[in-house]
Amino acid sequence: NPIDSECQCYTCQNYSRAYLRHLLLAKEILGARLTTYHNLYFLARLMDKATEAIVEDKFKDFKEKFIQKLN
Image (cartoon, rainbow, N blue to C red; front, side, top):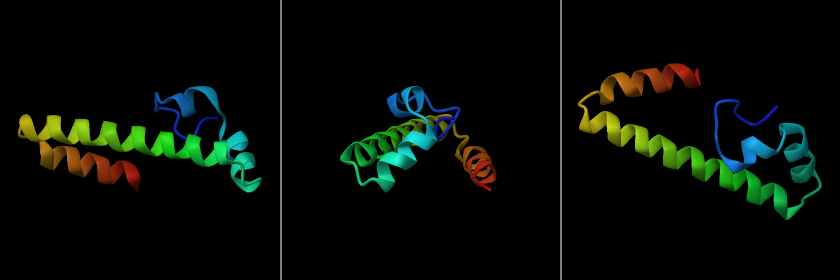
């Protein structure tokens, strides 16, 4: 399974969590690169969605749904 089944980043589309865990435990630089790529992709998409919600004057709903999803 990927880090996030809903994520469309290169890491989630091509690598399993188990393989990423192996890379990180083995201190392979590829593990750090792939997890960084995933994190940057996630944050960029989050900012895109937040900006869209602000423009549409729906940020409060966006924030509540996002926080609920994290819990």
